[in-house]
Image (cartoon, rainbow, N blue to C red; front, side, top):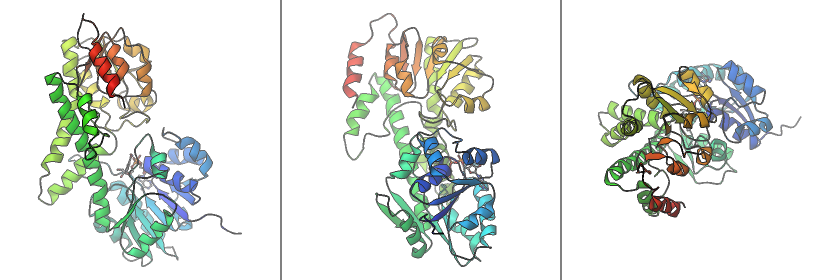
Length: 440
Ligand SMILES: NC(=O)c1ccc[n+]([C@@H]2O[C@H](COP(=O)([O-])OP(=O)(O)OC[C@H]3O[C@@H](n4cnc5c(N)ncnc54)[C@H](O)[C@@H]3O)[C@@H](O)[C@H]2O)c1
């Protein structure tokens, strides 16, 4: 029987990155086997159900017919394996490679039985030097195994779209012949392709994330200064963004960045730099400012409700950003911790992330957006589109994400901008008009 598939690929680790990679390559006509150690996850995927909420991924998974398993032996029926396991932080911020180690060990064991060449691709984010020092040694006795580093740049919320239309493809290669295989695999992707050595490819991923995180902490700092001076940072940012050298993205001031990447990747790069004896001052401050930023909401809240004990405080948004149910490093976490510590009763609403958040904070109340708005005060933590359609008119709102319609609240205080914090006065028509002007 003729094999209609272009290549046989295995993907190890079926989280956001692995599942997207698996589904994306399957849609491109490759045969894909997905491997994960989590049997529940594997069972869901095998039934065509996405274990995560990602726009378009569920429907694409149904179409893609990927094969999911927990059995590493299945990898023998593939020629290219993508390692997509998680790389979380240790307590000191350094990279925790335990999942990569576990998967690599199992992969190397299986590949001992393979008679034909096999390419191992590190797609997880690993600090520079990891592939050479911690991955390659497992394969050193296997002559026909090649190694590449191929970082993923997808954004959660648009993961599949980003996989299918990447901004660039980086191929770090142990030898050009192995990079050539990866180049062939990406043949029908339209974007710049850069070929580098392994550790450069690893650094490109960290430098990219560290830059974006820095841009966010930078605009938050400008926002903090602007607020003190009665300046609207969104007007400032809009004008800055027209400069091509700056660019308009990642200039939304607010309560900082969360998610599974920026905080841990910047921390891991700091730790890796310190191992070499270099202290990365900017990056350390980026993280420090990001730790403090969500707590500014509480300072602003206390201006309106000085004693939080016994008061009901509502949160709109629990996901670390809109269009995902991922709550890793969500800014809602330190905010709720601080509210609970001060004796406030917390209620919260998020369109998708409540089940995940409930695992972290079973003690708070999960309810509707309307109930949240009936609290003594409401904090906007994630800028879901639907929050722009709510009626804020009877609420006190501390807005961490610049949701336009929150300006119509009884009182609205922006974390890095003024809002309409003018009890008893008319709504600031000038501010509303200027917000309309800067919407581009
Ligand atoms: N999430 C993102 O937006 C994103 C974007 C770009 C890069 N990355 C990087 O990609 C990597 C994966 O991220 P993620 O968010 O998909 O992680 P994740 O934690 O969502 O998923 C990792 C998966 O690996 C599985 N796993 C762990 N050990 C395993 C083993 N030994 N064998 C098989 N499976 C195993 C886990 O069960 C889990 O399903 C990380 O290095 C991350 O930094 C993430």
